[in-house]
Image (cartoon, rainbow, N blue to C red; front, side, top):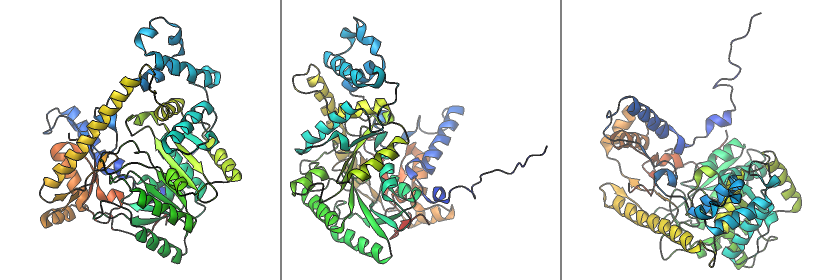
Length: 473
């Protein structure tokens, strides 16, 4: 019997949408860094640096941030309930961690962290998240509106699945953007409608620019269904003012757009003249309820003060969708059966941390504040250092965990990049990696207007040309 040895799938026959999008934080620079690591392992001392410093992702614990003790104690006990029956546990774990773990274990299916849960997440953990949101905003939150997710990324992807029907559906997204959004929009068959943030205005959002982009998209025949706002900004590090947020809420309400509020860096604000306010809080403060505007907000335990990226915990709160739509969202969420339990637990702990009077409150707050002060110091130091360098400028980092400096490359460098068939920013990033072992992301990976911008994780004190529409075709 003979067999056809022709591959059943090739680069020419895969889903074309997969070939269109890119995700530069894990792109060419990251692959080059891995090749260098393999080279250094085989030939120690072959490079002028001892190790690769990965600044291509917001990955705090990989760069030395310590996990919060309370979080890890509760996780350990939930994964090992038998420890609660041992006398020595009271000497190794704080009483408040033991009490919280007992409560969580009682709510887990089969009292076991290895069982499937409700597709939205364990009810009691969603109640804890809803209580945390209500305490933060001063407005009610319902556990029925909370979906616990495997990080914010899965929640964003689920939202795009629900919103996008065809290529004629558009989603407004900021430039520079976190490329998860363009990738998700393309993969789900929609069209990204970019609006530019103002570098000269400290990466602020100018509402007239968004209106212009919306009008252009509608003239082009698109049905724009939603607007993405990332606050604090990724990769730009700005924190929106309440006045700016009110303008955005009014705009989305008037235009009938779903607000997709990426608020995963809400605990990372470093300057006195800025404060985080959720878009739900701003909308409610303006007097708008669920009948007036639809908001989907995202949060994650990857950032903030927890830095638990690998645990993949997060949530989305959905406000302003009808019961029939919520039923469909639950159906889509059920396809993956449930989010991982470790992430669910961490998300509940981040939103419902120890309170004053709990035995571990003081230690928890001391660890949290130590991380915040450390990040704030690095944010200020790094932005100042970049701005002091020849040919480089950098806006202050108000929040999040990134700096986005601008590098003005000389003509000779641009010529050398062209000679190697590379964009100037990728050329610079590769040379930086080869010389120092520091892996960064070229600005074009975030679809920034200028190709000479770079994305750096601030704990390391250590383009593509602008398009009006980025679509799946």
